[in-house]
Length: 129
Ligand code: MN
Image 1: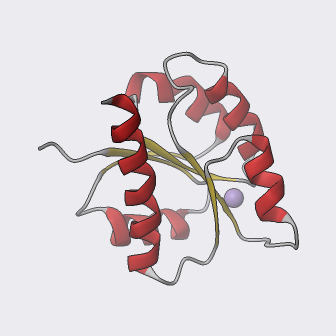
Image 2 (image 1 turned 120 degrees about the vertical axis):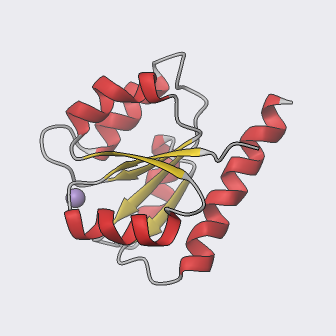
């Protein structure tokens, strides 16, 4: 079976390297460094899941999410918010915006990180079948 494709939208190169180190052997990773290029390129990539930084130059994570949800090619893709500035109530706020899940940076627990991704990929596969 082919590896799932995970799009990583993250402007911080160190964080991209960390994600590559943690997920690079499990998934095919496609990276975008800002929100505008993500919106321009995501439909072509047709990812199985998107990891989306909240704080991005140009177009922020919630803006990218909106563009994903109104694009019928992408609307059903699970999108996981990543944020370095965890605040009380964030989880509810981001889930309310339409993110499927929410993780705080720095990501420390590789197994948990991969576990959350696997859970959402599994739900997507179950919905599609
Ligand atoms: Mn950022």
